[in-house]
Image (cartoon, rainbow, N blue to C red; front, side):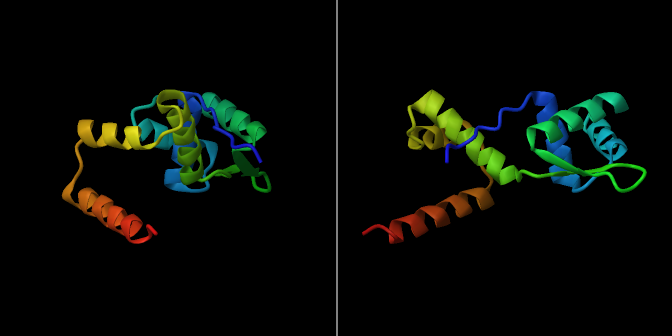
Length: 129
């Protein structure tokens, strides 16, 4: 089965993030979430994005009540994994290590994040034949 890269526009991604953060939500709930994150959008704009995401299969809705309730069909992890895979192919010819090294050199990590990375490296080392 071919992998999908889940191409999303920036505004669509913001709406999907609102559903990931808040769980099943009405259009007004999503709009309010976006407003709290300094994304001033109209109710009808949010409805348009939710409708588009539903047509793409990224969002589902429950239309059994007066206010429709939307929920993300795709997990944040699945979209992240697919988009990272696409980026690795485009920028690093499919090799993930250069991306990881670039992130380690250019970004700041907390002590907890470094400990988690070290733990993962140790686990991967112990699995080598």
